[in-house]
Length: 356
Ligand code: NAI
Image (cartoon, rainbow, N blue to C red; front, top):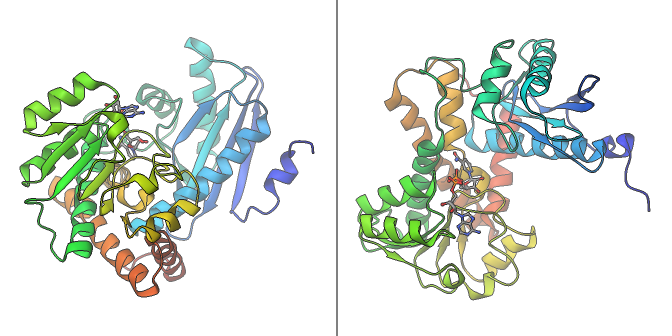
């Protein structure tokens, strides 16, 4: 069977539309996918990558923009699903890269605010600043912050509140004291998360591919480091994947000795069936796209003019409340929280923008 062409990739996708442009000077295909604008302007990062075929870049843009619709709706935040892909023919540097980014910015401008972007795989904060030289639709660069901001501590805060919600649901109390949490990956998100957990009285276990880093975080916070290979079989109340995706799969799920999985990593489930596998093992799973949205939430809040940090934090903490609803609904149906999250998303989209 031959690989799907442009038209086949688009068939069956029910988004608002896609803007396509072939950038002649660099040979890049630019795709801006607008999946849904029910709650607000389509918003999502800009991915720059070499694909085998431009059609694969289009497919990525469509899939990722749909993911953003779910992410914003799960948080009940006034943005729609969008994503852009710059399918470059080879790595671009210097003037070539700048030129492409400027032309991409001008293409965004032609949409008059229907799409807003930020950094994603293959693009950097510096790239965003380059785009911002010609376009006002770059999130996290314009706004009231001094210079580009780091979303990771806000992501960590959202995950912390998400874990608290899971503890409430599972054990009847959101108290961290005496609860053991294994944080896998103590980088930009896992690091501040581990600090919060230790501060709240949790028993901290940490693992990282960088064993030195794991040991030093454990030392600093009074926790214990765990070998990466032992992560799935380590007994704990909460396993918080904060490194790479697909750590929940047919091999690891039978080994898990935790009550809850709740962490920041994207795409934690290797396959959709893994949600059912976790349910069957009686492990409560916090859907990744709900629990890890704190950084995106903070970014966009500040972009929209929020200058009261306490208010931004309050919004990020509300991720815990969204998860309360999702867990309760899933329990009522005897289904995975993934099903609860989908129902929550559908309800929010059907209701439309939140009345102000
Ligand atoms: P990071 O790169 O700062 O930290 C990742 C940490 O995991 C590092 O300490 C690294 O040594 C470790 N690591 C890498 N590969 C590993 C492996 N195979 N096993 C165990 N440890 C490994 O990344 P960051 O920003 O903390 O992101 C972590 C996860 O959270 C990623 O999956 C990311 O997509 C997701 N995420 C991050 C957000 C943010 O605001 N930074 C927002 C939403 C999701």
